[in-house]
Amino acid sequence: MEFKAYIKLKQELVNNYLEQCLPAADHYPPTIHQAMRYSVFAGGKRLRAILALASAYAVGGEPETILPIAAALELIRAYSLVHDYLPAMDNDDLRRGKPTNHKVYGEAIAVLAGDALLTLAFELLTSPALTTVIAPEQQLNIIRRLSQAAGSMGLIGGQVVDIESEGKQVDVPQLEYIHTHKTGTLIRASVMLGGLAANCSEKQLALLCDYGEKVGLAYQIIDDILDVEGESETLGKHTGADANAGKVTYPAVWGMKQAKSQARHLIAAARQDLEPLGEKSSRLKEIAQFIGRRKS
Image (cartoon, rainbow, N blue to C red):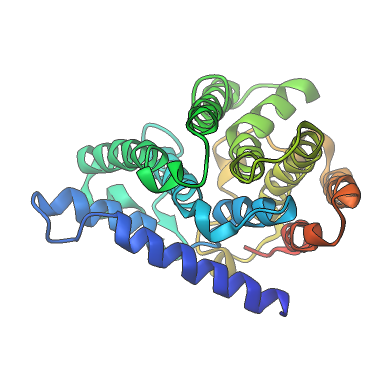
């Protein structure tokens, strides 16, 4: 199957599952459920979900059996963006060409919608459907690891240091901390959880984690590059926002040439990490290449 067709098929699979999981738009109280659905279905690649599905397949699992995990990853991603775009944080008014959640529903509902999405994510991780394919001990392990990735030692920690670094001079280790935690941690967790759900070996898990760490960092470096060189219409948001906000980015610290070189190096190294997994890791390799070439 062509890669584009594969991505479209997996996106539809994840979207259909999310449609079943989220409360209906008219379910009382309707405002919060409309706000939740607005951000979840505002468009997106479903990259984290697809990484989890592809990782499960790469180590011999059945991807369709771990859809609750894939959906939970997308809900956490959506929640983080709802909060990230708030005036108290990055103060963005566009996401993929559409007004951000707080511009439509107001700040209070946006905060609550993000809270509700995060809570629903962990409800999905306790789904009885998972217990039929994953041992209870592994299910608890997955919940613990995703909690760590989303919490103050992961995504939230990266966001805090990002906020505190605005307008300041920072060194490369601090820059890497921000990017590997704010963005990279959830991408790495997506790969890791897919492997764990498929009962991978310790050696396979180590390979997946190395891959996930590299593509996660590459993803954020490319995000930084696109904020400088990307097209607003293609990105669906205003470019130059990082510079205007005094954000710490790879092009700002390293320069554009070195930032691009580092992204290419990370993608190549991530693909190389997968070699011991054989042919079943080919989709993960293609996803890495897709991340390296993305324009939005």
